[in-house]
Length: 230
Image (cartoon, rainbow, N blue to C red; front, top):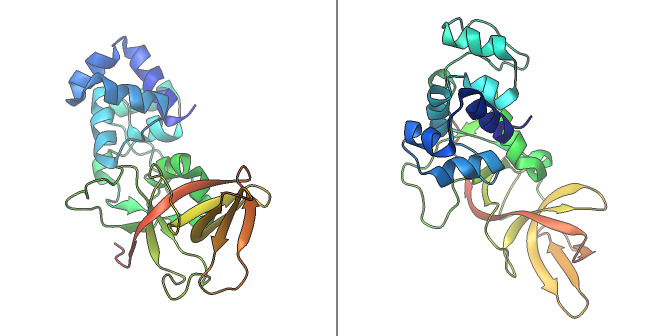
């Protein structure tokens, strides 16, 4: 099951409605609905509230487990571990703060990867915005640039912020997935409407990628570049 499915499943085990779960967390019912359909991914703070409201450890909700995991959590026995440094029973307040940084190759599956990365204590992170910028989705994704194809604007090791819900327009910097090669790229986006082609240009190369309009998907639009790591 996914995180969304486990939230719904655990709510069903408790016999409460979306509205009742929302009341426990101090949220509207629609927010619970968005989490249960997977349209939104809970933030670190939201996971903490869900952990308490659903009476189940955040690790159980995020990476799965069984009824014994829930019983152990309720009895405060929180010493058992899973692989990859993820603590199943650890309260979310003890997990490293900050927004996890994804690799470029992980970006096309950012939703599921972010769920796992939030619990990975070895994952690099950036500081969360103290004041969330207007117009930027709460599901913004930090991604590490893995090459120098976009010099001088972006270099290998930079962290870019993408908004997966922002509509890409001509000349935007975007992260895109090219279907034929299943490659995730950072490039400048253009469209040739007459030929029905998308053109992805690299500032450090004379060879753009040109694909049919149905042969790619935009993962997200780049909103800024950051240098600040935790």
